[in-house]
Length: 183
Image (cartoon, rainbow, N blue to C red; front, side, top):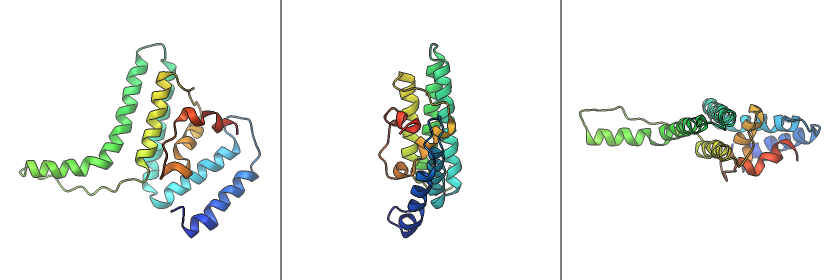
């Protein structure tokens, strides 16, 4: 769904605003307004590529889980292991979708006997943005720049927020940490 499309401008965005402002302002960790934003963001993302919604949710879950482990083992060396694992998981998804076809083509050119099948992998929309947001969260958490987000749904709202998901900018968690729980 494009921001300039009729569907977005006249149906999706007005409905999101309506539901958002009809929800009560809650001071609890997961407010009803965050639920509206999360659902709207997931619908927005799934509109174009529903199959890649699972990839984004998996990446979000792994980044959130590694964040919890980094926080839990803050005083030990294990926190570095969990940061490295988070980086590996995050960058492996990005590398596969962006570079697998490139490497297969080049290996075929260098080693014709190998004859790998040509890979035509569609690039998921916004994969770079949400991958770098997730990784910046884990890095900031490792450095102690932000607090851990214990609620998966609030974290996924940060990762998938539709106004910046496909066009950026990459937003650091430390910059929006407070706004996710109180506005």
